[in-house]
Image (cartoon, rainbow, N blue to C red; front, side, top):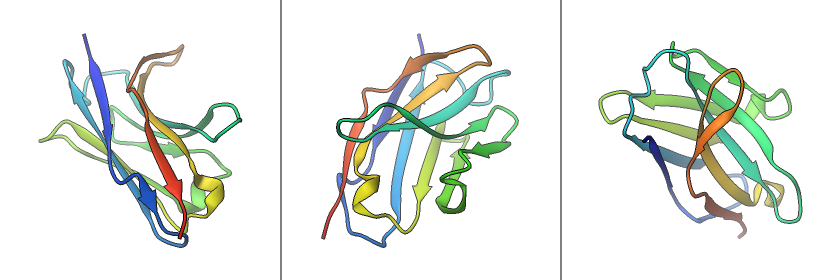
Length: 118
């Protein structure tokens, strides 16, 4: 049973870079056909997909966030990381990491609250 756990600072100042890490256990992030994703949910709003890093190490980002987003991985630690630059209060959200296939998001982390405030 794969498990995912998000970690990172809960408070980020405006204009800084938000950095979160997802640690995966019970399965390798290089296993074929999985897409390791980041999703967020701002307060009072729906889920927003941010992007993924694939088992191939390819990345793909939401067009609306692409200019500020970078997702990378460390296979030796079985982790993948989100960096979101130039944050504003509108980036305040609960951030989730998840394992996806082409058909669904089957496994999720518990989520971590990130607040952007000075």
